[in-house]
Image (tube, rainbow, N blue to C red; front, side, top):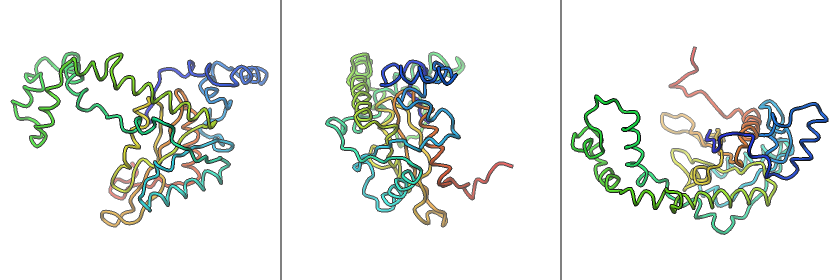
Length: 278
């Protein structure tokens, strides 16, 4: 699970209904500060316990454009929607807001960040006994996957000015991530959603740029099995995954929703080649 925040306590103030729910919590003898992370959705205690019926009454959104064109994956997603509704959730079809494609299309930064992050790692963590301490020295030494030499050459050419223009306080990537968080949070608020779901994979591959939604907004997400699409390598069934995205600091809610879905489906199976530990 990817978690996009530092503390559950700071998220609740911006969500509607917090004061009313805190008062109700006090009357019930609970500690509103302790449960503040779950109040961040405006839906009280739901999701506070993984064993609770988190899907009952939940509102789950999806964008048809993120389902993809693979018929097997689309079929499993339709089945997942039916499961959610059978568990008491309302599934809401969403229209992508203006600017949503820019969120999914923002690059991952593997080129612009690589040299900067490598240098920080070397300076702070690499043993002084290691002689090759720069990317250029690593390439000169030949101890790397040589078929990727052109990639490393490109990354080695990234200057600090280029990095700052991309990832600095006012860099293009920094601003796009902030805009993405605002856009998707507003989409959830406008539709009163607890989570947005989408397939993160087809069999043996990803679906477009779906898996960029969480890192390109900084919002938390959890992924779990959505079913299988028939025989794959060695005759084994091929798994397809479903990702759940929530607001900042809603990790408890997301885990509750995902747990309920997992318990309703039991799609997770132990791989034949990697059985359960004895």
